[in-house]
Amino acid sequence: MILFNALVFLFTIFDFLALHDIAKDYLSREALTFIEITTAIPAWTATEGEWLIVEISLLARVLFFLANIFLLWSLRPQKEILS
Image (cartoon, rainbow, N blue to C red; front, side, top):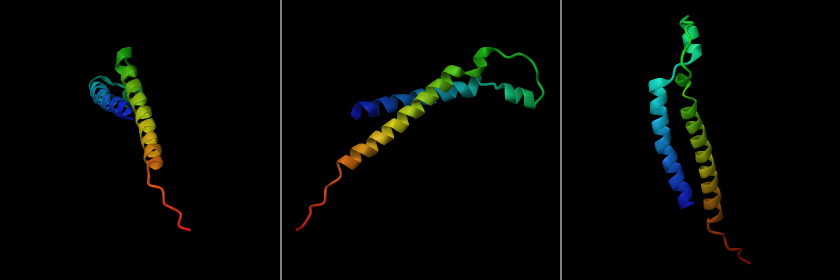
């Protein structure tokens, strides 16, 4: 679980870097169409790699939280049955 925690922490750093890059480079075709610009845009403006990092990070976080819930549930104190 400690290694998984380190992995999720690393993904948090990658998330920040990816989202920072998306904020600088992302340009959607929908936004251009909305303001009626029909010029061709370079493929790198879609920032597909950065969005992939964000999606993988989200999946890792969900798995981490589910594993934490399972671990904490399994470590909870058991009530003794009084007879």
